Length: 118
Image 1: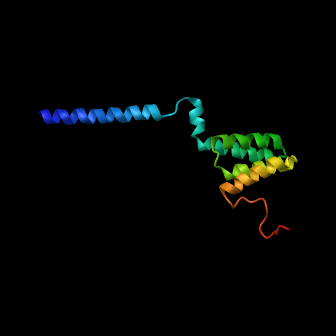
Image 2 (image 1 turned 90 degrees about the vertical axis):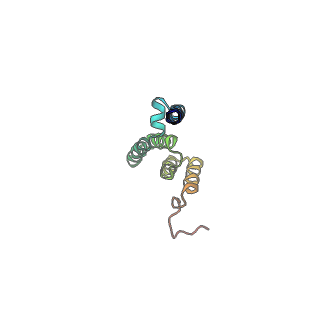
């Protein structure tokens, strides 16, 4: 009987430790929901594309930056952020965004395939 009681105590202690770990490690609040919500990042990216193709570049930049604040590894957002800055004539910012996109994914190069650099 004592052995069964010890096993029960061990089981309860282990379960309590897991619950405590989940409570302590789980982010809380509204910011945490968006922080880990890649759907929110995708929503901002899609809004940025809409603004970009409507020639509303400042709004597009804002949306791409919001997407990147949620998912800083999104090469697509950096890529289109670069083009939005390019359209506004902000070449340094455009180059920084293009460089970041290329670092994350070499597929996102602002130079079209087949175009040689001099």
